[in-house]
Amino acid sequence: MNHTDPTPVTDLIQAFRRSQTMFTAVSLGVFDLLESGGKSVEALAVETRNDLRALRRLLDGCVGLGLLEKCDGVYSNAAVAEEYLRRRSPSTLAGYILYSKDALYPMWGNLEDAVREGTPRWNQTFALEGGIFSGFFRTPQAKHEFLLGMHGFGLLSSPAVVRVFNLGRFRRLVDLGGGTGHLAIAACERYGALHGTVFDLPEAIAEARPHIAASSAADRLELVAGDFFNDRLPPADLYALGRIIHDWDDARIGVLLRKVHAALPPGGGILLAETLLDDDHCGPAGTLMQSLNMLVCTEGRERSVEEYRELLESFGFEQVEGRRTGAPLDAVLAIRKE
Image (tube, rainbow, N blue to C red; front, side):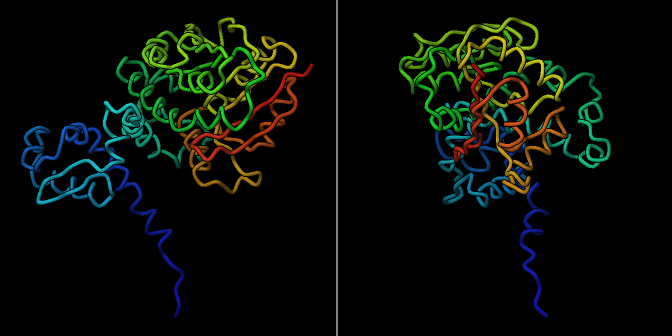
């Protein structure tokens, strides 16, 4: 009897084990301890204060996942870990990994209840009132690690987002909820006449300051603290919203899109950086998982290009076009009606 290949199922059975192996190694600081060179398990056990035999299993697991290399009993970072798993790497994803470990993983344990009730799981998981942004990020360290993680993803996505459309016709970009400024930086570095503003809450602006200062376009970039739901938006002919629309329910999205529309001059644009669903909602797999993540964590969801077109046209935008970037985030550009 011929059997169907069980690999898709057996891989998924083990998938959480792989992610938790990486999460734990990042949390213990393994990759940070190896940034200056290889070390033995004995040395790492002392520095991390962990059981030697158990730590060896973890390190060997990281070798098997391609995150560490091992030679004559000495462990060292693989290239991918050196770039993305060290906290001090400019491209680090460690902040988002720790957020995934401490926030997303526990909430995903309640996915069944989220599907049953159609609501996010953070009150159930953490006994915290309010939304994810007011609850889990209530400490400076939690906010720092989250913004650090978003910065890492931004470095992977923002250069592609600002490249897939020609934004050279615009003169001033305001990135709403711009975090560390990665999108505004990428846009201003690509388009020499463009001026950019990062508009976000004060704690995010503080995180953005060193990144703006290090940019070759620093003289065309500024930071403005504010709340895009409650404060007046800085003037612009292009507003960018990266991973913003997918966080909120339709009512809150409507508030924000009306504000953007009212602030734009005729012919001004709105640029969304989101991951796009296929029109039939059957792919890509990563986007489908992200849409479930929104169910677990927020009031929002992911959308297809056609759904973004319908949404944006209902608030006075036209010429809505979506493009895949090949990066973690895709792009949608729309123009305010004349």
